[in-house]
Image (cartoon, rainbow, N blue to C red):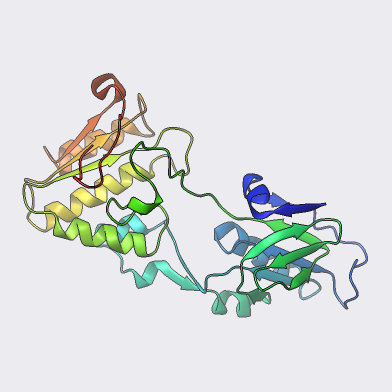
Length: 263
């Protein structure tokens, strides 16, 4: 039986038990392969290697050589952190905790042979497998917007170049300009995230003297996480700069037009 990348992406983070018996492969130590170098995958690789005290060969499969975290990206937008401070390589953590890196994309999993098929055609055997691919955007979730429009209308929910692009766009907003954010419907990762982003964007505008600029949040939800605290903070710190509009007012997002930059 084989599993392609789409199949195992749909499973979320699937972790097999790590109570290893005799290794199934012809090797000195049992091997755990971790697919995905985000927070979940790195944490798994770190603690499996660390807690086994070198007794398990741990290999982390991740095509990128650097990871930019979304966790503090809003602080970068607000001017509190540098881009370099939210970007991390894998060499230090892998060396410190004793796991190996394989910088390739995993294309398939052969469960019968206990092998991960890599982009270059090679196979990586395992005794136990951790799949932690994270989540991705639904590019068809907003009518009129897709992957081909992310440079024109950046989302920045996948940290990295998109984060830098959004920061550049934010810095270019004139005093009196308008930013429109379409918040995601439930469920989604980090419920306060969009509203933390709005707060830090408003802070950046205010700190640079652009107090007449405005952020309009078009939300498909009737309410959002910590709404009372956010709206109280917006009114106190950024009066008149942030307007939240729920579905009872806007009656649904019909479409966006990247060519004219309108919703």
